[in-house]
Image 1 (cartoon, rainbow, N blue to C red):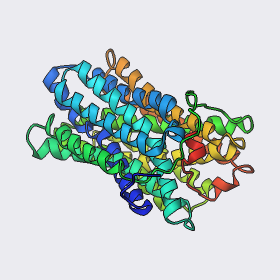
Image 2: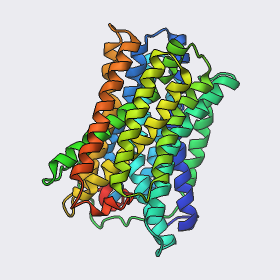
Image 3: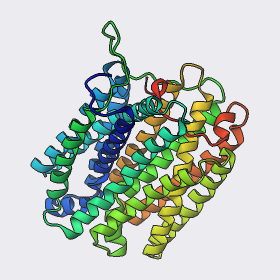
Length: 417
């Protein structure tokens, strides 16, 4: 709460911008993977391993460090998270071989795991100080836009660098290295919103908890979060390779646009249907996941790039709604005083969905064709997402009235603890 040069209102937008930049850098490498593959000569399965390293970094840091800003301070942990992202940029610049790419993505994931909960909590607190009478949904919406919006923007930026500028494996990381250092300096000047405890607090890992009631709805929520993030993982890791091998498209910008469109569709769907009742959102999610994934499979088999891309966009809308509903479900079913622990479990399940299926795909690709693996994966995700949406819609009735109104659930102090 001291040594700040920005007001709470200005600090809110500084933190939101830094959040957006770190999340964007997390997906900048997406259209660059084929270039790394060409330079080092590794198989497609290694790309999935490199991508999974990022998700592992997110999961570990979210579990071990995502909550420590409650007593160490939001501002301090945000600066640390941004500087860890800077370290990943340094690794990308200095170590181009596969071990270096694995290390850089693992470190990059660690920065995101620390940042996500911390920045979301900080945004809520800064906005509450700046505009005490404002609905909390504004801060939550800005946090969600920075999160998914950054993930959508990253592949587009990476594609632009790769297609139109020299040294595509160097310049994007060098630019973000500078930008992130500036962001860290700016964040160091925003107000602190956490009062340090009088006595040093003993460290413990993040607590997680499943609600004892309505287990069916909670399991469905976790299943939906896992499957939804598995689809994000597919488009973030293998989309550029699929464009080359299936459609003969070597345009790096197109690779960035493909991944960008899925995340952008997820964010847009959440915003457009924010005030629609949750049962209707879940019905829309089920339809969009089914139609979109069938179109992705059809586009792969025909092959038809417009059908493939259109299917990804429609499925992205469904997955965005499904994930927001999963978070709302978990929040509504959580016991009093344990909402943060329950939401932590949902986020950990979701990020495991980002890593484990992609790792499995990488292993299977060593002895099966890419098209066959892709079709089986799409079929499994289709069944999982639609089933999760249907079960949540049926079970999510009485105790979930708050979420049924379409509320966005912010990660506030309780969530991050």
